[in-house]
Image 1 (cartoon, rainbow, N blue to C red):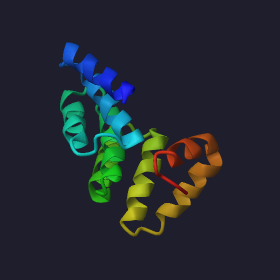
Image 2: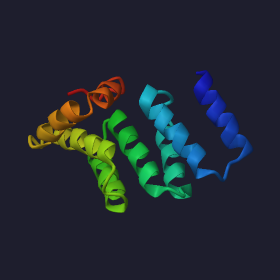
Image 3: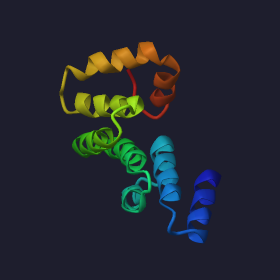
Image 4: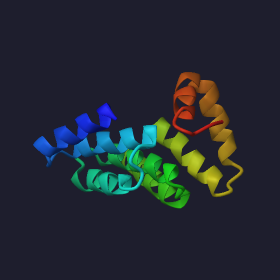
Length: 130
């Protein structure tokens, strides 16, 4: 994938930039690419983050993509503790909670879909469907 290769080349040139690791983590999670070592990249993003809430949000999506909703929930909650207004992170959290059997999560998923239908459609393309 050209996008992933470009991100990796940028990281090779600037390995200390946590935002680049975060971009790669999010990209891999979004397109479900390189899942075998995606969490290594996502962990590096969190470790190097200048903006921890964003890195935790990306890693939460990645955890969902590899079938680890309990870890996705923990990361989404940590991101929200740092920045409570991240409504997209709340959407990721609701999907993690639903995967864990929380029936109450459907109410937020439905609300999000009505309030931000374009974002719900975008996240559906990542695998987070209403």
